[in-house]
Length: 481
Image (tube, rainbow, N blue to C red; front, side):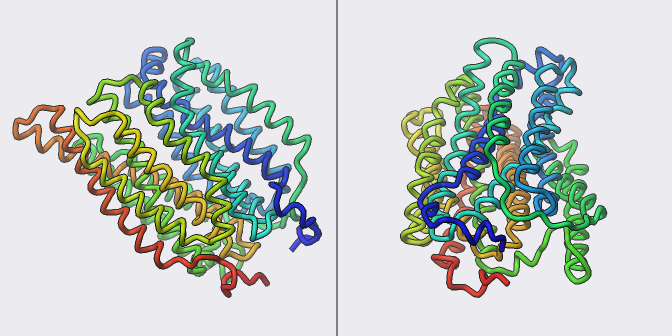
């Protein structure tokens, strides 16, 4: 353990370290940008003369790049200093944002989004690794709660902010508005950031990097294609199977490297029971959250006739509640442990999703808002404790690998959640339309069935919550060497 960490003043135990606050701010900016494009698809189609399917690639390409790059971040963050990692991540993000703002063609815009995503992919693992290193265990819940505030409020604000900006003019304003903010955050961060720990010189296994990019990227891409029609079903399933097979090869490669050298992604993290259980709970909860994030805008806009801005404003209170509760949840975790939070959180998750199975064309908007707020509050009570508990169960030298695995599986869970609900909804709607049912009735029935599937999956989170310990401390898992 570096001397800088050992000599840390105890007074810092009750104050979020500056390095973490700066990284939280930067992460907020990059994650806000990720959701800014949600309302811009119609403008892109008109401005750049592309189809809706092509325009959706501004989001798909971002997700694909995240899935391909995150597995390498564990190795990358061990090799570089905190300042270097920050400078590279924000520099790449700024380059991508500038490229998007001036993009003359859709191809250039797509390239800019890929560059942006490469920078974004580094920020969250860098933040998580630094937090786990500099914050004492007894204070991690509170600080992780502040992180939750950042990464929860940003996606919640994205659609509403983009709706307001798009009232003023072109989609390019979305990137023009982000540039000076990201530039100021980068400058301020580089002036005040200090390096945490010492970088380790290690080689990278390029075969592992290629397998990770192809495997996780192929799997996420294949999952994102579900719901586009039966014509593409064969190639889609082929992509998913190929991606899964490449991931299996990647896993075998890592197991071999763990015996003979340095693995790209150290799978020994999964031998820590608490970390593995936390990952399972996080993936199922994230899958349910992403499914609802896809279904609710479709329901509100296609079946209830709301505009994208009205949809964003209706769903924003839930996202804000999730973020603003983050610090409180973190403090409660530090005081009482995970069980008093995660068990009610997972139960609330199931109850809210079950409520959405009753959606109709006449459900009062206040009920939609209340159910969404319950969903977000339940996720707040779940995510902060399981992130803190899971990462805290690892030895310090495995933090970069743990955050890398966490980030990668988040992307896979997001893609799987989206694919699952879209496939269930589309299959059910197509079946009913074929029997003569009106299109609106068929789509509503499809959405309700998709929420039923999400609810059934969410029940598993309650089971996993019972298996989790209340705290990571006191376990043999966390004994660093």
